[in-house]
Length: 174
Image (cartoon, one colour):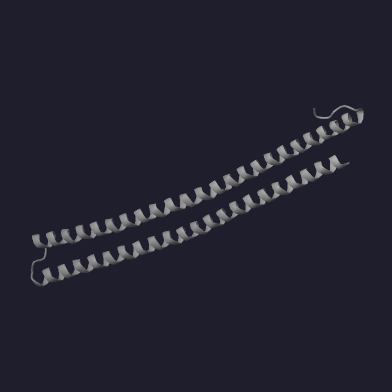
């Protein structure tokens, strides 16, 4: 009866350790997933803000170029120089500067967007790694529990044989 009690006690202890390990690993993986979700939400907000700011900057730059064109046309018109070479040069300069500025604004927006995307990938990868680690921890705890159970069963079986040998007058274990 004592051997069975030891076996049951050992198995119960192993089961409790397995459950505790599994719960801890799951909790850590869930926390990592929640953290990643919060990071992704914040990155999405930053992406929207980045796009909004770039659109505002582009709109402002277009307004500035329109005002420059209007000023140029007005000053050339009052001086009687409409449709001259000066108008073409000034118009081309204003347009080129506007194009360069808009391209720069878009390039900055795209760079920031790529940076945010990379951060999002890293957050998702971190959450997946935490889940994988939790799964391996649970598997390891299960294997340890199985080894403990097999060891306890072997010890109990050896103890039974020793008791039987002892009752038969054979020196047990030697």
